[in-house]
Structure formats: structure tokens, C-alpha cells
Image (cartoon, rainbow over all chains, first blue to last red; front, side, top):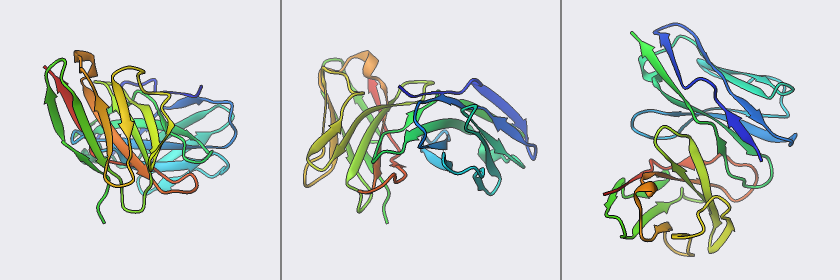
Length: 115
Length: 114
């Protein structure tokens, strides 16, 4: 069974600084997707960024980028120029690339942004 | 272009009552997933349905829980004889028919058991 581990229950960052959230996963599959979701206090699940395992190039979305290390099964999220609105729970998720399969989530990292 | 709609947003039930949670997928989406989020936890998969079919219910408790996605109308997650441990946020996500499409989430239903 696939598992996703987020080893940092809480992180904090100063406004305008950079923070990196860690995620590791375990799978025997070679073809899969990885995601970072943001969950603010409103409880919405907002897709931040996704990475296809077959792509070596790290995904980037504006201030958000990932460091995908397939051999190490590591998928960290870097947030640059942190803003107060970035404060939220962040969940790393895995999905096998086989039809419409469910997501496997980590337990999350709570990010606080300090003004 | 409405997103995934879940209702109610918050549902309060007493122990032993039934809870019905509704999910209308995005327009054009025929795949629905239900997830449960316990306090301070990540989302855990419960069940995956297509229209009129349950595809994967490996994450759903064997007793008291059931799900359906009829030909017409929303998907329903039903919990019979609720207990305190059922208190959680229940999220629905939908995706399109083919390929590894991203899942779009609703805002969830918070179920509180008195």
C-alpha cells in the first residue's frame, strides 16, 4: 500500500521569506502523480501544484515550486516570498496513474506566517 | 460553472440517528470520491463511485456506512446509527470520465455527533 509521510506537523515563516515543507512517500509503482493541497481555515481543499512522476523537471506555479527526487521518493514544497494568505494546512498527496484512482494524503503541515 | 457542491455545510446529529451527506459533482464529471478527515488528520479515502456503480469501497467501514450515485441526482453518503466517532469533515471530490484527471473538491460537510 502506498503511504505519504509529512514529518513536520507545524512550520512557521516570516512574511516575505522562503519556507520548505517536506514530504516523502512509499510506492512500488513507477507511474504516478504527486500533489500539494492547501486547506485554509475555511476548510476548502485547494490544489497548489502537481507533478507527474515521469517528468524530471520540477513543477512551478508562481511562488510555489517543488523539489521532486524520485529515487529518494521525496517531494518537498517551497514557498517563496511568503504572504499572510499562505497560512494554512498543507497536504501532500499521491495518486497512482491508473484510471481514476483515489488520492492518498499525508497528515499535513500547519504553516503559520508571521508578519 | 459551478464547482463541486456539498450540502449541508454542517450537520448535527444525536447518537443513533442517521446522517445523509450530499454531493453534486462538477458539470461533466461522472466520477465521485468520498473522503473523511478526522480532526488534525489528513483526508482518508472512503469510496469511489461512477454513475449507478460503486467502483472501490475499500476505505469505507463495513457497517452503518453506504454510498450511492444514482443516474439522476447527487451522490449520497449515508451513515446509519451514528456514533461519536463519526464526527469528522466529509469531503467529496469529482473528476472527468477518462484519464488521470485532477480531482476537484467540494467544501466538505462537518458532521457533529451530540
